[in-house]
Amino acid sequence: MSTVTAPPRSNAAAPGASPRTKPLQPIKWRTPLVYGVIAVASLVLFGLLPASGKTTTFTFSTGTDFFAIDPVAVRSKTTVIALTLVALACAIVSFLATRIRHHVGPWLPVLFGLVEVFAFLTWAVADKVNPLPVTGLLAGSLFLATPLVFGSLSGLLCEHSGIINIAIEGQLLAGAFMAAVAATLTQNAYLGLVAAPIAGIVVGLLLVLFSITYRVDQIIVGVVLNVLVVGVTSYLFSTVLKVNAATWNSPPRLPVLSIPVLSKIPIIGPVLFQQTALVYVMYVVVAVLQFMLFRSRWGLRMRSVGEHPMAADTVGIKVNRTRVRNTLLGGAVAGLGGAFFTVAAGLAFGKEMTGGKGFIALAAMILGRWSPKGALAAALLFGFSDNLQVVLGVIGTPIPSQIMLMTPYAVTIFAVAGLVGRVRAPAAEGIPYVK
Image (cartoon, rainbow, N blue to C red):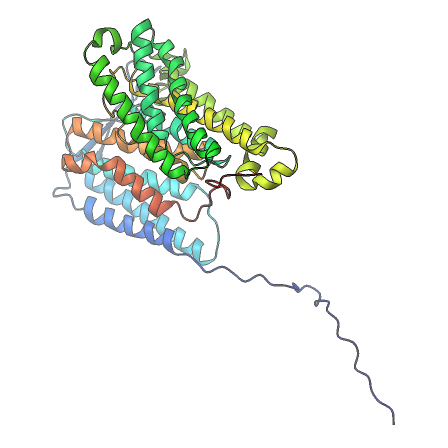
């Protein structure tokens, strides 16, 4: 009796079929939901103006431009409704793209943010005597974002090498103090700009000592260093600077440097090319770090130390030496940003004058996903919200002044909690490395 043998089973997949199908991730509706809630709230709150005849006037020109742009007056209610409808359309596009798992790119959040901001501004300054100076608002926003940019760059330099730098607030304050003292003693604002990074490096040395040498918890060390810097600078302010302010605490201000030709371009020129030397230095630092961090051997080594220090050590990279160098470099960058509060802003040093900007810089670093250009964009957002409450306070707005004062901090919380999404910090940050 013959037997029939079944052919052997083949593990090969059928032609055109994937041998192993990766399960789809669940759809996340948070982004379109946030867009929709904001758009509907804007339509309800800003669109319900009592009279349709109100107008809002925007100005764009300054006295130094090549040519003048006439002020633009718009019907407030009509413009607000039109802009919020565009925002609602963006929410619908986000919903449809999320439904089919399609990534729309950065243009959608940028467009949504712009129309929402202009809708709010149109409502806030409707029928005011003074028009809204758009160029001045943007230029001031860039200027106020300067310490946030330097602080966030300091944070990402440290964290990409594995060190959590909570002491940015203290480094900014120390840089402001050193810049004020050095500029006053020499009566040279640029020497104050040179001295500011030294104070940041000193704070960075203490962070290195306790975090790397003694392996103390880095978050605790950062908080303690902030308190230490506040105490030392407050004591020196009360006993030395305040007693003899003419000798120790009367720093000259950095002059505004206008770049020929470029500074006369309407809107763009006054915003980008009529700034102090500190802002121009910021341009260079952001561009250099963006290239060096992701396109150079130095950046690759630093990121490898922050991601997998044991593997980096295996190929001959000195892990702790790299962390020390980058922490000190980050301290210098933050100290340079501290010069903004004194020599760049033309102010004498005051107790705790940084006002929590170091913590907002940390939020900008996270919102920017540990990237220099991302940190710049996030810092500009926070700088805009900071300058907005100043400009609207001068023009006048129906929003209570207390709410306007909390705007920068509210925007920070909302941005980090609602817009960041899932981000991943360097894997080895905060973990001491012992061979």
